[in-house]
Image (cartoon, rainbow, N blue to C red):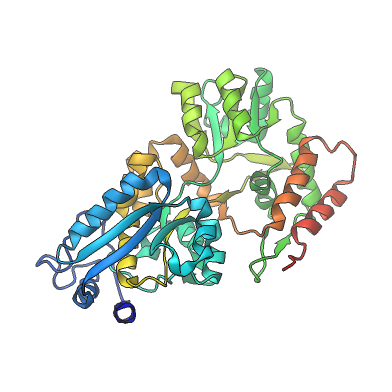
Length: 429
């Protein structure tokens, strides 16, 4: 059965056009869908149905918090194909831990599962993702945001279905103190905060955030082709200017390097009036600032007298199909349903998860959400997180020294050289 369905899948790879959402799609074998309506591969779906014998048994893993919606979407999916006998089980698995769970035994893992995009290289290397070389109901690469598609792609091959676009960072702020023009400049924001005896915050001693300064100035870091070790340009020309800019920010009376927990405490107490963080702090910011709650893309900062736009890491949740599934075709069709426009809109409505689908992301409802709208605005300056493990400790050490004001007086070039040596160090097997 597995090989038969996979052969049919490969035979039905050509799909053109798009389908505006998938919640209203008629069953593939109904009169309405017979003859391949635009945007669907009705013949491919029908071939899948015709090849199916007995019960289609699938397991879907989603996060604990998304169990109810996932079950709802699975029920909707089953209803689209009333002539097929399904037994689809929904189970819980953290997106952050999916890689470790799946790779423990790929053959025993779920047929369809959700994971954070920074795990995709290891999942592909471990043979745990079916290439998205065919589509049935919508153009996966064409209908999702380019950053999400990039995050789901390895070596030019799409390997997963974008589901959300919520894991990045931007600037929260209170309109009691800042205008939309004020938040375009880090310098201006710090000046306003200092004048009011307040602080704006960002966690400098965390590599996830520290990246924004160097990348913004054109000094990149990332994975080498081996997918394990890193390259890093931070100690090249201009690197010491960026390090000095970070020192200047950290010494400003209107700034505080703070963790997420310190940010939440500070905004609740009124000592912090703006800060760099992500959607996970949106509820706390909205509660603290009420009608003054707002968010924007990251501002520019001063490097050697010039204004430089801050970059950021972007993050997406993806849905993958296990190539060891006995029902690869049905797994891919289900993954499409779980990630189509209407499903992503329901995910946003239920959990305020930013859609990766371009049309859903452009909706009035999404634009009206300050955090999601800010994340979308920052997307132009964001890149998917693709970095090896040696990055984190060395970047944190550098960030800690800069946040503390470089108390030992070590030359900035030496600090950067040391950080780059650690970031790019070989990885022992």
